[in-house]
Image 1 (tube, rainbow, N blue to C red):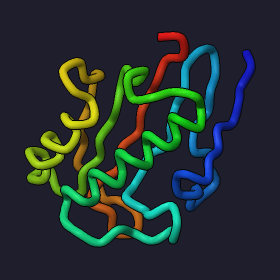
Image 2 (tube, rainbow, N blue to C red; image 1 turned 90 degrees about the vertical axis):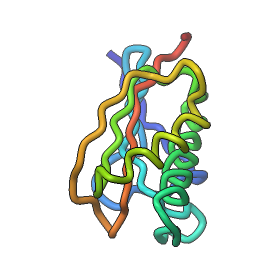
Image 3 (tube, rainbow, N blue to C red; image 1 turned 180 degrees about the vertical axis):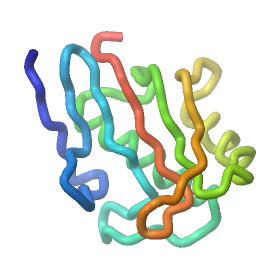
Amino acid sequence: MDRQVISTSAAPAPIGAYSQAIAAGGLVFTAGQIPLDPATGRMVEGDIRVQATRALENLKAVLAGAGLGLEQVVKTTVFLADLADGKTVNEVYAKYFGSAPPARSTVGVALPLGARIEIEAIAVRNL
C-alpha cells in the first residue's frame, strides 16, 4: 500500500514527531488540529468559539493540502479540555459540517499548549 505524507504551510507545522496527515488506501488521516495560528505558530486568543473556529480552519487547510474538503470527512474525533464547552463547540461545528455531518466522538482530555480543543479527521478520497 502506498503511503503519502500530506504537508501544507496553510496549517500549523507539527509540534512533534508526526505528519499533518497521511494518505493511504484511499483514506486521509489527519493529525489533531489545535487552535494554533499557522502564521505565528501561537495559540489564538479567545474563548472556545474562537478556538474551535481556528481548529476547524486548520483542519480544512490540512484536508485542502490533500486535495479534499470537509465534505469528504467521514469521521472526526473532538478532544475537549472541558466537556462543558460541548454545546458551544456543536454550534461552531455545525456551521462547518452542515446537515450531513460525519460520525464523531468527543472525548475530555488534557491538551497541549493550553488548547481547549483539538480535532482530528478521517476523510475518503473519491467520495
